Image (cartoon, rainbow, N blue to C red; front, side, top):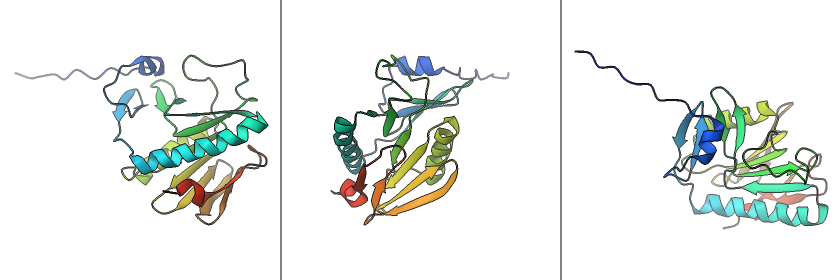
Length: 187
């Protein structure tokens, strides 16, 4: 007697957003929910430092807003993929002040920060970076706290490396904003 397996049904980005998952860290990849390990203290600390620095800048410049906590960016449809950036910046040009989407915005953020956790694999991170750039994110900054290094990805430029003793800045997106990478990595 043969047994047949029933294929798992793909879910949409909209279903994923309302899913009551037992695991708080997950992404939707090609219609399937993928759970990820909790990133840990240092990851949260670096993310918080980024949010604080961007928050101070945006208080005076009022050029956009910052989101965190894996709020979600749709990178593919049919089947859907929803990536959860650690920190993302949306300019008011892309997402005007009168728009606060109930679900995922229809437009990608201008800038995404990803903080590498000890459990992250570079191949997976680079796939995520590629998806974000392909969907229209202007810049993705991957910060590696263990190596004290940042890598800045743009679709039309070579990868830029930023050492801990250097400054992070994104002049075309956040004019006048700069922060020493070391201050984001402070433990």
